[in-house]
Image (cartoon, rainbow, N blue to C red; front, side):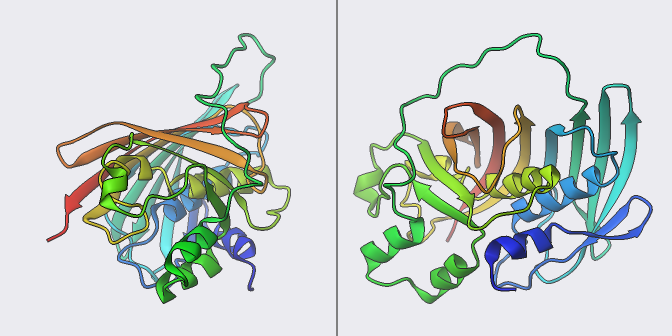
Length: 289
């Protein structure tokens, strides 16, 4: 299986080992910890597999409790908290090597007729993705060639990521930068037609760049890191149906960073400017020695 999008779909296809218990594999990669978006996406798959499928997820709230170990399977235990007339609630606990590493609560809502309808317009009139370079190309143009580690990452990346603003490469360039970032993203190949797969794939992608907004005023995004970073918690609200293999704009900002933690907010739009998803995440930032 060479297509990164196919590998992502496979990663999200959990094995059911008992009623309400699922197992997900974790790639054995040269990372300090399992990618948080992977755990969140798999946990949401586990929650969705215990519903009747007629109620799309409308929100999730999650805590990253311990770093996951790459290469070690993760077991997802689902608690069926509530099955109401309109809403379904699931609580998921992710366990690895006998320890809880992640908790997620997800709510599913039976679609209803519109009652109130409004939306603030996007923050800016952003350029479309077609004229922007993929991030790997932009890095290669600056460095002349991709370092081996980035080349491996680019070849297995399931999403095409294109930064709206050209990347900054020096500390002088970031000195006056606002804590904002915007990227266009889409899966590199079709993901099929299961709405739950698209929702979980976008949940995976939502953790890829959101904390960029915290780092932008401090250091170049793709240079050597001066901080150890880790996601602490993550919340998402899904407003409209979407496909994660079609272009979406991820507009990100950080209203505050203090006390070793940075808060980031994201808004995900389609190409017509319709708000699809709202995201909030807090990350831990510790300066490296």
